[in-house]
Image (cartoon, rainbow, N blue to C red; front, side):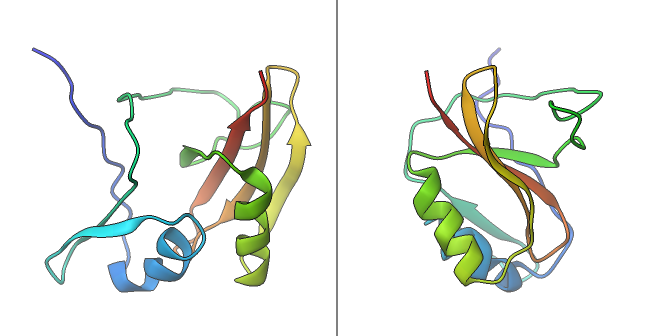
Amino acid sequence: MAVRRIVPNIAGHGQAGAAFYRDVLDMQIGMDLGWIVTFVADAPTTPQVSVATQGGSGTDVPDISIEVDNLDEVLQRAQRGNFLIEYGPVTEPWGVRRFYVRDPFGRLINILEHTT
């Protein structure tokens, strides 16, 4: 037995998420059944689940962490889209540069790029 994928499910209208997940993060719609829209990234991933008492550096635990390869570009897109940046950008002592942003559904998203 092997876990092949973990997909966070967020309550909300999927098309409303397109301005964030498609336009800010370059994710594509992989499935749209009307009642559910799945955004996918064109990158190999490793299934993960994290359990935390805080988000690091005294921040709230984010709902989702998304690793990107160009944090500055994603930050600019989020700012252009008027998405609320709640923390950062900051370089953390554990080797990531990151910021927290709210998606259209109010979920706290940790956008990060490894620095080491």
